[in-house]
Amino acid sequence: MIIMAAYVAGLFLILREAIPWIRAVSSGEIQTRGHRRQTIRRAEDPQRFAAMAKSRFKAMGLGAIVLACAVGWTVWGVLSVILRA
Image 1 (cartoon, rainbow, N blue to C red):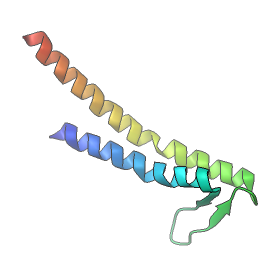
Image 2: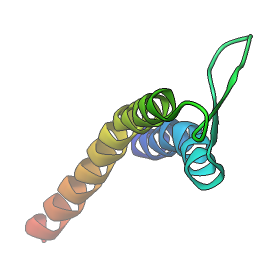
Image 3: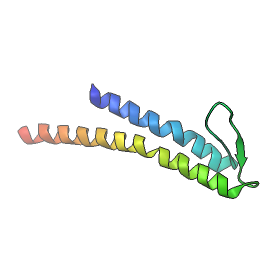
């Protein structure tokens, strides 16, 4: 049960940042976080846009780590079942 929760949590944490990052890369506009959102356009402020896109990409790291742990736990469990037989 914990493994399934780790898969869901990992995917949630990745997609929470991946969807806005993909949208920003394709459209050229990224929004800041918080209650007073600002739109940053790539054409107007390329350095800030690049920094924001990089931070969004880095934020996916925690979800990737959780997902990797879930996959490792699953592989470990499958190997233990195979080696017992």
